[in-house]
Image 1 (cartoon, rainbow, N blue to C red):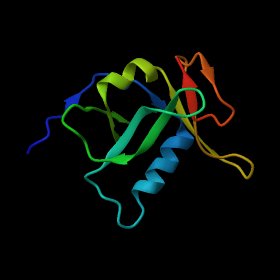
Image 2: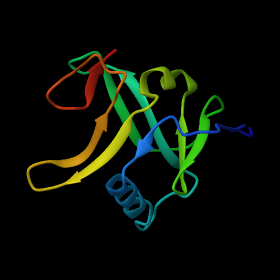
Image 3: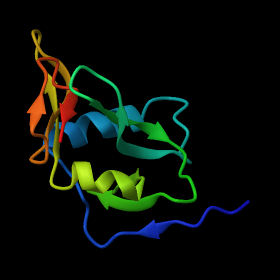
Image 4: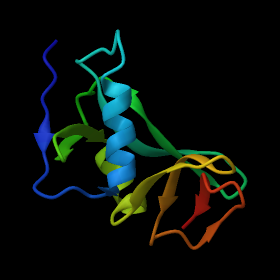
Length: 118
């Protein structure tokens, strides 16, 4: 079964230089499946109602694709409503390490920074 990819004209989200660097580092790890793309999305759950999804995945038929600095990304088109304009950053410090999300669509977030409400 061939998967049809729809390429969007502009990326619905942005990645900081730190996030781009960390994602490229992960993609260069031995054994990385080059058929996968960076999936950015949401799922129900978390203390505020929705949780961010950020990880590598194979494209599905309904996914829209876009590139950020040469990084192939995929997103379910229904998730753009919640994520349009969001910025993903990477914090590499000792006290705070991991990806962070700055979402202008979130009406409320929780202390962990990975859960939000709209």
